[in-house]
Length: 327
Image (cartoon, rainbow, N blue to C red; front, side, top):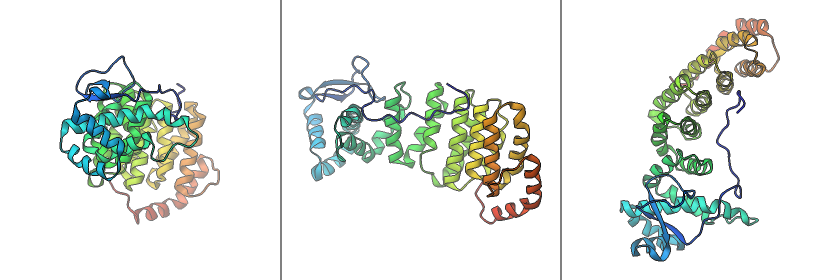
């Protein structure tokens, strides 16, 4: 993979590479998965024919497939039975993955087709689906991980803690997926400062450049969304000195996104040193960051930017201080 580019999780299109799954095969809670078939990650499960399911599971699945008001009532009963609820979310997750390609085979997929209904069911039972979906971020299959992440975004802030827990996973790709997803999830209110600190610490300390770069991007996204840019700005300024050009570039892009006047002098210092690194893309992004902070797109050299700051810096800092952006 070329340095200087952080590959976000590929957004697969329906009809990409997923094998069509047999509709007669359904997951039963407890057991083992067959033949390495593409499955959501989580508790082990066996796949059996519908007629071989225990009666309660078979009736539950039939009620879900029928849908309507009757299922809305039945869902509340299922929710109170942990084993049955686990069975239901496993089947909904498997249906989501299996129907992902099938729904592409028609010109205009139904708005309430099997794929959409499966996603909606996982969103409707977050207390049971979140553990399965979060664990699915650990699988090597990028499509399963992508689909799980998409549902976790729909669920929202309740997904933050389980996703954060994956930031210490032994696999770099799992850590990268987790921190990328944190950049997409909504803010968490009073706990947001702790989330920002954890993302920033990962950006500063992870041994893999691709994780540090992704964390830098997500830190800027969350900080701006939460309107808590001060700590994130300082962290991104430190990352401008990262030995890996992809990380430094991601930090510069984040500072462009935040456009925080307190970063101006450190961005300017990085711009002055950038030519020696031989990274023209970094030079361009640092220039963009200065322009975003100044709100002035006129092209300038280092000396001109320094003169600009001497003339306008106090005004920009005072203006920023009137709308504080958190710790």
